[in-house]
Image 1 (spheres, rainbow, N blue to C red):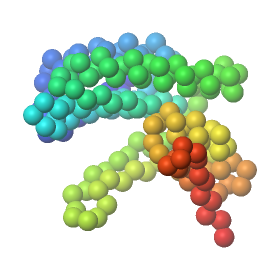
Image 2 (image 1 turned 60 degrees about the vertical axis):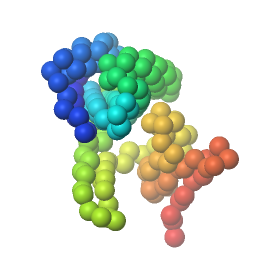
Image 3 (image 1 turned 30 degrees about the vertical axis):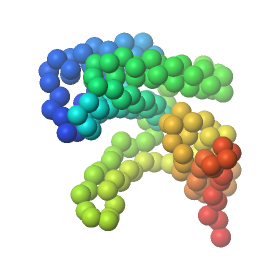
Image 4 (image 1 turned 30 degrees about the horizontal axis):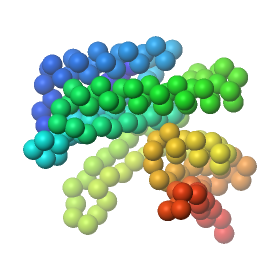
Length: 178
């Protein structure tokens, strides 16, 4: 597993870096190859507020978990069980639909995000390749990521669509066909 550790408003020390790498190494049992990428962000927000976010990318799928407390080590202990549960949940769904061919495809997403510091302009940009999928698959991906919207390439019509979570708990679908 390739691990990138980033500190925001915080300088990540060697001890925290070593502990993070050791704890994430325990997740290697779920992956067959070294194509897994983990990005760990340590962010110090206020005097006693520290947030840890871990995002895993494997076989074109993303799993993300965050925790906030007054200690980064405690956050790691909270985040890892969340990630492990999401990986198991996703793997079970994927195994059922793909008949035990889980995580053997090449990563489809380009892991590129850029941050720009401009007033009133775009502050974050993400680029990724769209993979054809059904609306149900997009709903599962959105649920696993924990986001309130998801952009995907609909497999039947081959059009870009946006799935979003409505305030009433239902889903909405934007299909920009003319």
